[in-house]
Image (cartoon, rainbow, N blue to C red; front, side, top):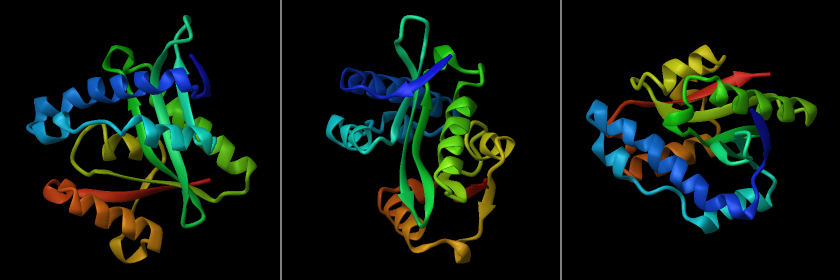
Length: 168
C-alpha cells in the first residue's frame, strides 16, 4: 500500500470512502452517524492545500483510505481517518496513523491527538491498540476542548466520546 498526498481529483473519492466507512455504524445502532454527510469538497481541499491530507492508494493509484489532520494545542490532531470497508483489516488505517506520526516526529511535534467514540470497536479500542491513550477532560487543551464542544453541539455526545493522545 502506498501513502501519498491528496490530489484535487481525489477529493470526491474521499467523500465516497467516508460514506462507505460510515455505513458500518448502522449495524451497531448508530444510524445518525451512518447517515452523516462527509466533509464538503471545500473543507477537504483546505486540508489538502495545507499539506495535511493523505491517502492510501491501491495498485491502480486509487484511494482506499484517507487521513486529514491539523495543528491543535501544539500536536497534530487527526480530524478524520477512514478506510473503505473493502480494504479494511489490512493495517491501512494504522499505516496512515504511523505516516502522520513520522511526520510529527520529524517536525518535533510531541503527540498525535484525536476524538472518537469510546465504545465502538473500530474507534477507541482500535486506537488504543495503535498506541493512543485517553485524555481526561480536565487535561484537554483549549483546542481539543473547542473540538469536543463542537462535537457536542453536533449531537455526537449522544454516545460516549473521548479525546485520545499518542505520545511520540
